[in-house]
Length: 455
Image (cartoon, rainbow, N blue to C red; front, side, top):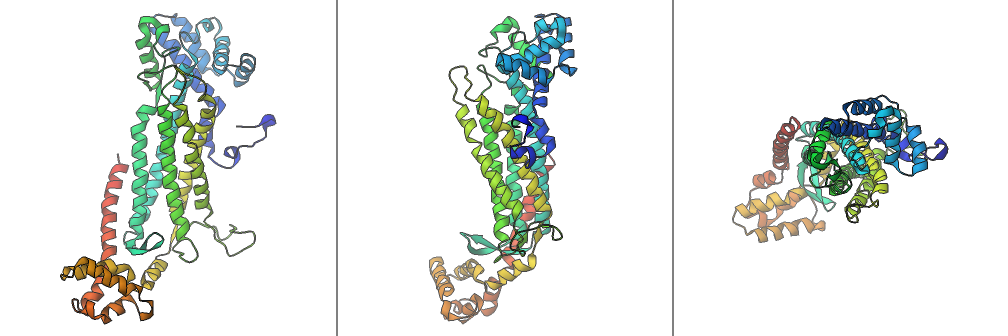
């Protein structure tokens, strides 16, 4: 990820992503995983009698000793123009006489794709932790604000009352579904192959199935059921498209925070260090939702990265290299950015300032107009045809020159009063019932969330 001379140019190196996860995709860690696969191969073919036991021991010792250096691999690759052959030769040099048996029966993709399966397993584990922490943070906010009244909005317009807790628990449920998807995907993602040039295992003769089984057992992976020279790229496409789904939900949550922080709404404020943080170089009053905007920007990039793996599913015959170069970019970038997004959102959620007073103020300012559904259903219960009741309420809410709140208009309207008493009108236009329903629904969803988090 560095340019020549060591200069940093990729923002993932200095701006986005945490060091612990960046290390997962470092060249050193990728070499280490490839060497693990080579060692598992040597041990397995020795166990079935294809190479000497002492050769396997020598290869394993060289693979785990640190003797294979990235600098030597680079030098060999510069000469050979083949990355896996460079690793095999460097390992062979380090293994001494045992080196003659390195890479026995394998093709390059046996090593790279199996090492990729190890990488995927680690990456999925980190992302699962991220999703879990974000869901927990959202669940805490939902519990705290289960009955915090807020006007609901559809099409950017006032709808009916809800609670802020119910709004938040919906996001918790969606992120939890992504965690479920990740769990369901992992057995298809953490796979490898040790099946030779076109996937038949012909190079291992009658021991093919046993060699592959032993290699995968040592590494804790499953074998691709029917690989060609490579594992099926549908697996990677599914993974990056899952990350795109996570990015979609993340941007939806960030957009909600951004909209509710608008000056004219001001129901939320994402964490802001009043002592030091600057919102604008010009306008000192600004408290911009910068983290939520950053999440929005990165989420769009993660979704864009989902396309190349779909294209990579189409390879010529048993394989070509059309997938290889872009996977080196797409996979680490997608994982690192998704991890970055989820951790930033967790920080925002945990430090979120929820202005319940402002929520109540906005709800009260509607003058009962958000409760037209309730009044319509109340009239319907009095045997007024629903369509007629709807039209009556539509007329009441569009008469801007009539003055007063909907409650006052409804009390004055003879058609409404013909069916409902003043007390009934007041009760029907009270948002408390809808907020109680939102709180009860929040409790039900939270029970499911906590049950799933415990699993």
